[in-house]
Image (cartoon, rainbow, N blue to C red; front, side):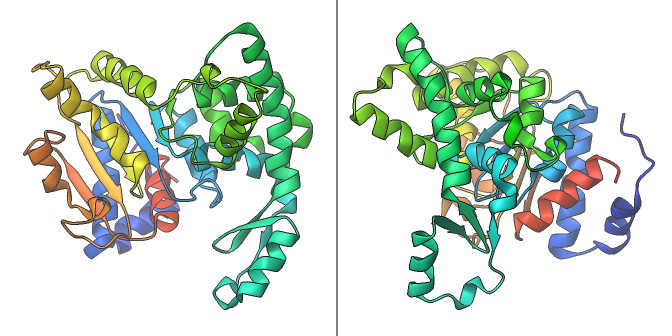
Length: 327
């Protein structure tokens, strides 16, 4: 059961977050813990630029404490946690990013900086450094005729120790290192829509490596279907969604696929659902659909604990994680 001795952050949240999105935040955090207390497992999905926002400072610890069992994320979040790990000191922050002119943006590019809102990722120290190290691993798989998922290649890179000399943050703040330590499965749909994914494709075009060394979306869905069935228990898996897009849309569909397409009527719906999103609530924007809409698709049940927090995930998620950690 949850340790009820809460730290100052959690006490502040419970005392002051009483209404509207603030109250939904507290309800969702308590619902997350309640799901774990019932023996349920939890999936977290990462969209947006959560890794560049350094969400690892809180996410890594809930991974280490066993409060996350599987992660689905975009290719960008998979790699950007590692970029930050090895090149943090070279990042450039631009607080006045709203005032940049097109010429200012062009100048950043010419200096090998790629901007994510107020943070610029350094191409040479982050992206190219990882590409060089990853290429060695891809070539090894190519020569051996082996095939792996994108996250498995990242785990191989981490475990090789090739990057340790470049670490520029405390390793405990990297959620990828924490996930690798616990060997948590990571589902990465649409991985080709990422910097390393683009680089991988370019090396396939030049015939240096083969596309056959990579397992993609269909294999991920097949794997996830088996994992869900084996791990749903009596409660169903919890679904904690940060942002919208493919990171959330892809995995949530595994339940109706199992029940409707494979006709496995014993499969349980997701046992908990929370989405943090600043997408406008609407019934034309899937990322802005309220949880009730998912009932008609066979993803949630009538009584599934469901929450939607319409706010900035970089603010909300660390507070929920703080609650789970009793901070």
